Length: 185
Image (cartoon, rainbow, N blue to C red; front, top):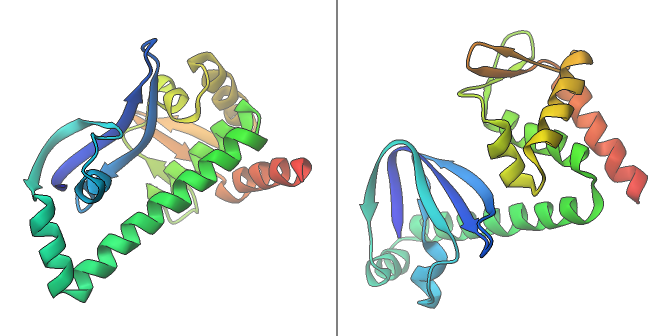
C-alpha cells in the first residue's frame, strides 16, 4: 500500500496494443495499492507520478493490524473502497449509455469537483489536463475531446486562462450530462 504524502499520481492500465486507459488522478492524502494488499494478487493498474511526489509504504500486515486497532483507519479504508466501487460503477454506466461527447462533459464535471471554485461560480482546473489525458480517461480519441471542448467554449460553458481550464457554468454543463442520461432512460 502506498500513501501519497505529497504530489499527485495517475492510475492507469495499458492495453496489449499500447492504448492507455486512465482511471483517476489521486492527490496527496490518498492511497494506491489497496486491492493488492487484501487479495495478494498482482497489481490491477499502474501508478505514475504526474508531479514530484513522496510516498509512505505499508505492507499488508501493517495495514491489517492498523485496521484491527483503529476504527478510524478501518473507516478510512472502507470509505476508500466504497469510493472506488461507486466511481467505477458510474464510469461503467457512462461507457454503456453515453456517447463520447457526453462522456467528455461528464469527465469535465468530475474534474471540476476537484477544482478550485471562484466567487463567480466558475471552477478552475489547474493545471489543465491535456485532451489526450481526458481521452484516455473516457475511452475516446483526443480529436473527439478537442471538438467537444471547442463546442463547449463556443457555448460559453468552458474557457482557458493560461494553463488553467475554467468551467464557467457548472450547472449548464451538469444539465447537458443529465439530459443525455435521461434521454437514454
